[in-house]
Length: 134
Image (cartoon, rainbow, N blue to C red; front, side, top):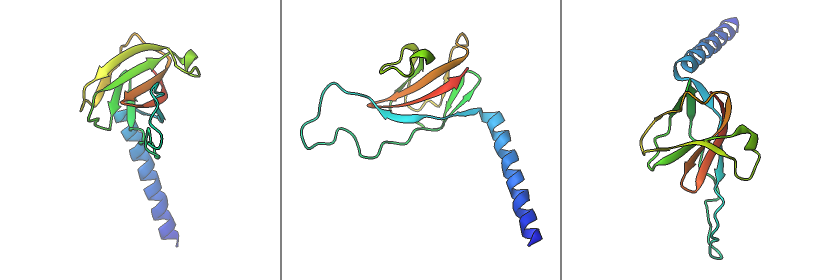
């Protein structure tokens, strides 16, 4: 019984150490929430304007001023930095925006932006939103 507990404890420590090393190499994970963009045009009666289950947010890391996208998008996306003071507004103020071609997995953000910002990845009618600290 003791050997089993020691083995489990050792595996837990090794896993925690590997996670810490991975975070140092890759960067800090950016928690994102999936939202659907509000569209002006309505849909016809009986049709679904979007799927019942939203798509999952991509896994994104921030390493200094570089975003690492672990999801390879099949379409172009737009990455936006948002004014943190307007994050609770219906439409937050975009302070920086860049178009990211399909398949790109690294996005360099300007070094001139420092501090806390909202981040939004726009993908078709969906967007993924979170907060980063540059």
